[in-house]
Figure (cartoon, rainbow, N blue to C red):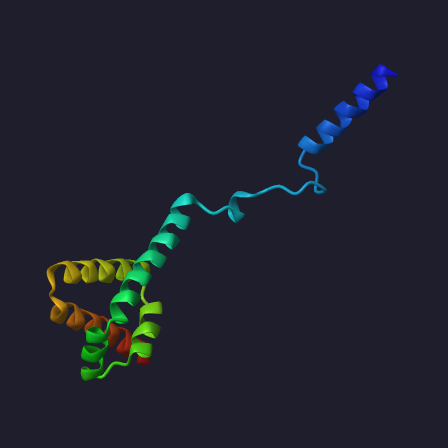
Length: 121
């Protein structure tokens, strides 16, 4: 009796480890790398930083003077690449620390204008 229980256990283990289609397994194509997750989280942090900057009253007023609404700026922010979002977030941090709001607004408007013109073509 002990022999048969060991034989059945050995068969079950070998069947499980053999890659049977009944057993679901993860494949490398469906796995997400750590760097991908970190980059995605990093983009969210940078977008939040820029959104917070764009929600300030003085920034909104300056954007309106330049002909860009707050909603349009948010839509264009969503269409930026990861690299552009990271760069713009760094510019925002530098502008907030240094108090150079005019320069950062010009950069934001230029980036948004480039995106707008690129989408029209």
